[in-house]
Amino acid sequence: MSTLTSDLPKLHEKAGDFMPINGTDYIELYVSNAKQAAHFYRSAMGFQALAYAGLETGLRDRESYVVVQDKIRIVLTSPLQSGTDIGRHIDKHGDGVKVTALWVDDATYAYEAAMERGATSYLKPETIEDEHGKVVRSGIYSYGEVVHIFIERKAYDGIFLPGYKEWKTHYNPSDVGLKYVDHMVGNVELGKMNYWVEFYEKVMGFTQILSFDDKDISTDYTALMSKVMSNGNGRIKFPINEPAAGKKKSQIEEYLDFYEGAGVQHIAVATDDIIKTVTELRDRGIEFLRVPSSYYDVLTDRVGEIDEDIEPLRELGILVDRDDEGYLLQIFTKTIQARPTMFFEIIQRKGANSFGKGNFKALFEAIEREQELRGTL
Image (tube, rainbow, N blue to C red; front, side):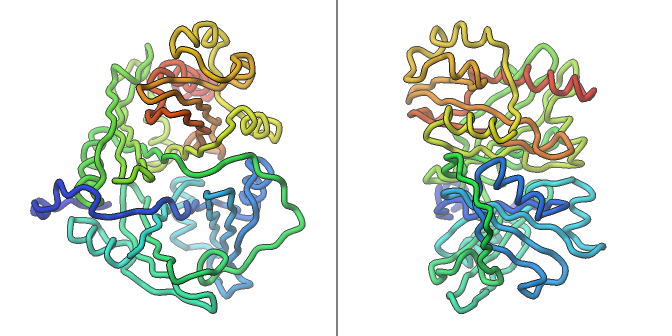
């Protein structure tokens, strides 16, 4: 776990975006069967085969399949032997996110800036290269066992990273219109939300752009609190959740119990046509959380006029919310692995910069219905 030192340089506490980040480079999941997981992401979610590393590339302890859809790259990694750190991670957490890789212009500077401000080192700056050029990477720990790896690739034009080869396959299903990672949500232990808010502020130069308390995010039974951290250009947004007191066990507590610690709760991916994307995902077998049909009876009263017809939204279960800049449409998958932990959000922004506050109650009641079926509410 990262530790914040008490003598962080005062000069930089309000320095703003002192660590420029260009965007999400890739997300790496440790999974029990990377080959089968890659098939799922391609068949069900429209990702394309991109790169591979494993026995054929000289690795003996693990293999990784890389899938891509527009600007989203997901690395799926499994151990090839017992007794590895990857295997231990899977044994404890199940399938889940290990790495959020951030694309930067200078991975050495990003590392040194973070370390100066109190980060815990995961990977000292190193240069890896092949015939396509070189990549500099470095890394720090964040909440739970999640790490941020800084990737500098301005001198590289290969398929993915040195050590990977192009993955070609006859089976290439079409994409579903996913564009980029909009935000990624972390669940942390009770009392730890503000600690990690401070971490992202002081160590990485993020700012808090939104805050929700248990009055905003609650039902009759459960509640949580959340703060949204963003880097300077807004390309990286990390909402951080912690449980709040409620009559029954919240979704955050359920996650922490089954993940056995803090970790990534969901990955929000953007689309330009959510009706088309969700229709395609549903037809490929992706299951979504549903809200009651009555939600749509008063939808325009709550959010005003929207471009979309209400009936397709009702049929698919897509939620709508509005803020001062516009509106957004969103929907959440059910969990995508055996444990009730990580899931995906599909989001389309039509001006809105918020996260669907008006949908929280209906959404959380839908989650509670799933918890009740699992016997974990």
